[in-house]
Length: 573
Image 1: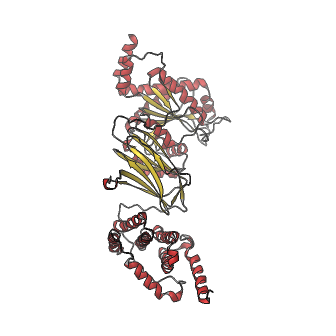
Image 2: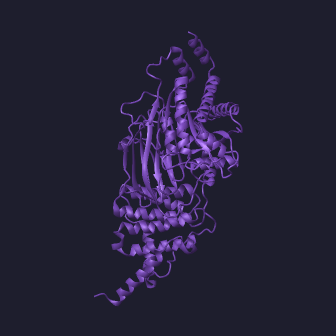
Image 3: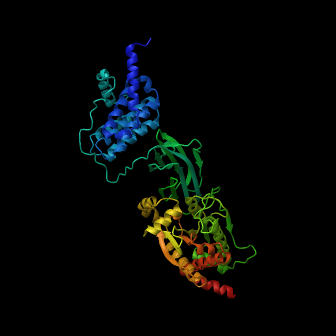
C-alpha cells in the first residue's frame, strides 16, 4: 500500500515535472531562470535511480542546459550551460557505455576551453577532459557528488523551489573568441530528408536536403591508420532528426570519395560523414527555399577510374556521323579549349517560371524551345558537343544544373531565361555573370530566378566572395559582354524597340560553383505584350539564337583568333 507520504511525493514530483518540462523559450525566461530549471531537472534525475536508466530523461535535461547557452551565447550563464551539458553527457556515457556519448562530452568541454578561455569553468573542463581520457574513467565526477549532497539537504522543499546552486560568480559577460560564430537555432527540429551527388574523376558535388533551415558545422578529420579510418569530412546539422526514408549509406566510389554516411549522432544532431580517397580542396555552403547544404570537392586531374557514376545528360548533340570534321577543325577546338558547351533551359516541371502576358504562355516552355534551337546551331556551326540540362518538361534543382556542367567538363555554361516585372511596360535584354549584386534591380532578378527572397540574396552575398575563388569571373564577364552586345546589335537591325539593359552581375544559385565561364541570359520580358509575342514567334526565336551564337563565336575569336585563320584556310582547301 502506498503511504500518504509517498503519494505526496508523487504528486509533488509530477507538479514539478510539469513545471520543469515547459518550453524553455516560453514566458520570456532569462538564462538564469532556465539554468535553475535545468538544475532542478538534473537533481530530480540524480535522486531517482530508475529514471537514470531511461536515456530519454538524460537527453531531456541536456536539452535544458543547451537552451541556457543558446538563449544568450555571450552572456554570463553561457559557459555554465555548456559545462553542465558536458557533465550530463559524461554521466550518461558511464551508464550507456557508448563511445559517442563520451565524445559528445569531450566536445562540449573543448568548446568551453576554446570559446570561453577566461571563464572559471575552463579549468573544470580541463579536469573533466582528463578524467574522460583515462583508461579507467572515474565513475562519478566531483560536481555530481556535490550536487547530490546539496539535493539531500533540500529534500524538505521536495523540489518545489529552484535549487540554490551557485551561479557564475562574475556578472560580466563571458568572453567569446573573436572568430567564433554562434548563430541561434531556429525553432523546431528539421528533418534531413535526402542526400544527392554528382561526380566525375576530378569533381564531386554532394547535396544534403533538409525540410527546414538549421545551423550546421563541418570539420575535416585526418586519416587514422590505427583504427583503419580514412580521411573524413563531416557535417553536423543541429536541431535535426534523420528522416525515416533516408538512405543512411550512399556509395560514391569515384576518384575522390568512397561513400557518404548519415546517422543520428545525438538526440538533436544529425551527422553526415564523407569518406575521402583524395582531394585538392573543398567548399561547404548552404542554399535556401528549400534549405540544403552543398559540398563541392575538387581533386587533381587524373585518369578516370572504372565504374565512375555520373549523371547522364538528357541528350548530347554531336556532329553528324556523315559530316567530315577536318584536322584544322579539331585543332580549332583543342586550341580554344571550347569542346563542350552546356545549355541550361531554366525552370521546368512544376516550376513554370514567369507567366507570359499572353495567357497560357510560360517561361519554362519558351526557354526550352530556345535552348534546342541554339544547341543545333552551335553543333552545326562550330562543331562542339552541346549538352542540354533538360530536353523535356522536367524539374531540375538549381544546384543540379551546375553539377551537370561541372561533371561533364563543360567549357562554357549558358543558362537561358525570360525576364518579368510587375510593370508590364518593362522591356529589354540583359546578360548576367556571377558576382555581388551592384543594384536593387539585379537583386530582384536574382531573387526571382533563385526562387527565394531578397533577404536571402543579401545573406548569400556575405559568403559569396569565398565561394567565387574557383569561379571564372573575368572570363564569364567577357563572355557575357560578347553575348549581350551581339543580341542587341543583331536584333536592333531587325526589330523596333530593342533595348539593351547591359551586362550585370548578381549571385545566382545556378552559377554557384561553375568551373567554366558561365552566364545567365534574360532574353526578353515575357510579361511585356510586345516581347511576349516575339518570344513565341519561331522566326524571332531563330534570330535570337543566331545572335547568341554570334556572341559565342566572338568570344572564341577573341580568345584565340589564329584558330579562325586555320578554319578559313581549311574551307578554301
